[in-house]
Image: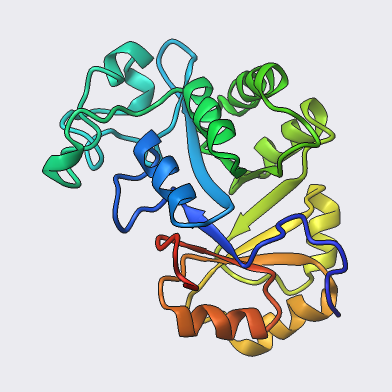
Length: 246
């Protein structure tokens, strides 16, 4: 069964930006994504110590900056004093981890569509989603550019359904569920994201394809593998290579 009107109208979503050539989740990566011709970008948003929003994937700043410690233990100002580009290459020294406001400004300037992944801290899921909802209500031109919320947390997606009912929601999972239709109905999600792992066989993807649910596979950096997954029924793949299909 094919998906008649997929939310993601592209075969490719740039995973955290053009992350094979720029530091992830930075504004330089957003601009490079647009330059390479991708139309959708995925990013990660987290809460800081002062309940502000910053674009960082990990729980800590250790891997993607010259600092150390958890994101939740630092204020946004403290995080933005760190170098979040030099770890990738000297030419990116001085890049900072942007706030959600700054990131959205850049996304809109570049004309990109957005997959916004909420990175929950157990116990602060509602606070995270509330802050995201406030920023999106203020900044995002609903109906003009594609947008959906994703996450591994069912609680976050339920809060998103309550606070942002008009924005589609995506459940991220490791394995293909045995009954994807029942799961999506239970969670109230519109899209399913699955990890490209060996145990997710073609037979499992056949179940997803037959369900009629829109689904994407992450993270795929080989063009031949990406094309195979699209043939198996995926509507899109997430990739570190924003020019994967060129």
